[in-house]
Length: 153
Image: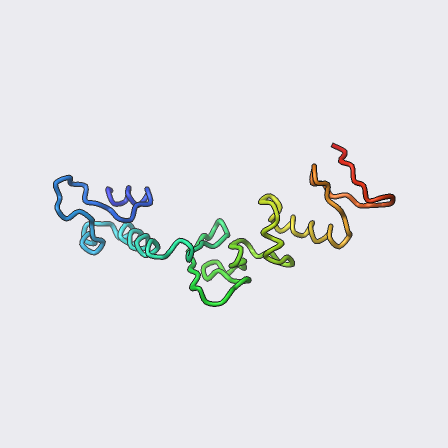
């Protein structure tokens, strides 16, 4: 139970709970016989994950998957497939695949404008040459007159 509680706290280097213990840090292999298999496996996975540098690891962007992936530093990859759930994502932006929009454009979008439907709206606005109000962010279409745009809010 002690090891399991430490893992729930995201602690992977677990010290012996006995204050007078001279061993100090618990060893995964030495605890194999006394730990339930699930806790042993989870601790082993956590130790392996801790060995990977933060900037090299990321997780599948799909909330129902979140599989761990490692950037091996090879070639620059954009469109990628999660080996666990088999869905497409952008490995450069580390988000769901943003079809029809380049990464640098996607990263300029506000956090609340990054869904698939929002990107489709941006493409529609771009194709129809709609402008966006800088105050209220609504799209407007020029039907005539000068280029002056006045916010109605």
